[in-house]
Length: 352
Image (cartoon, rainbow, N blue to C red; front, top):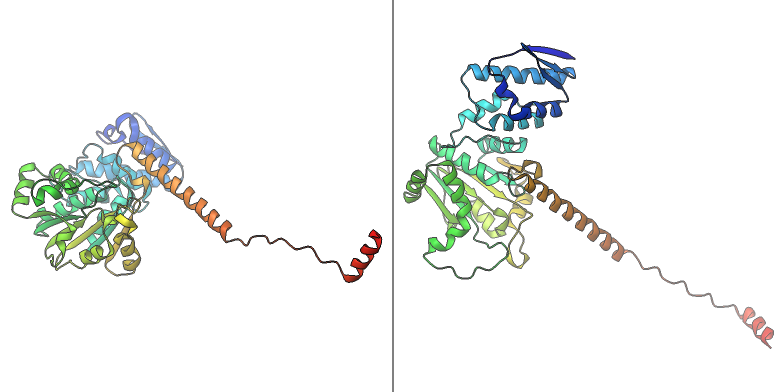
């Protein structure tokens, strides 16, 4: 099927740098897009052509309404659209417009990130589970700031277990805050990235934003709060149960973790793994799982995560084979049948 649609003003901005957006649509929808002097020609299957036509119509409508796409936002939205047939460009743009993330504009860069943001909006407790670089913590902090600026909550509480990543740092100098700050630095980084430094410092001073190890959560009831537990794979079973039962009225909790990077000593069972098993059928909770396709760091990170996953699968397969071989019954040697008495006699006579 071939369809021609009229060209709207500034349509060249839709095409992106070196036509990267057009190539993305052509590869994902299996269509061909050609820009003519006064029209855009789309060729492909009827269903795919209709989706592309709707996308161009949404873009033109958003442009007329004064919506401006920040650097990279349109490409991120198109990636979500190509992975989710039910998503629309207008819906993604308007959902992003409703959220205020301070000085940053945050748009989901994959279908799972979009589902993650929607789950946080629609549920009081959300588990975000996946590899490094998928935006679990960053998006959770962004949603917390959005809720605080919109006055839906009165404070943000960021918690994290104080567990070293495979090394012993010994006793750290300074006050208690100085000792725990190195473990909580990723949370500070996300805050300073989205809010002015003066505003972050003021919020921290007034305890509007509180950053603390999970050990400080016991005995508290957190009302009117947005609570984030980062690196939850390093919580023990007792710590996880303690944290998920802190939730008070008008509060939200987001728990993030990567089950492939557990640094607990003495091979203790991760509280996150246990929570996935125990809470999977509890109403009101949401679990969002990320994979290497959601990695938004350097493109090498995506390949590294995939390589580790493939290595883990190979090791697991080898262990299963070794286990199966060890359980297989050893082939017992069949003893030679003893000769009958008559045969013995015959053989003795023959020898004589």
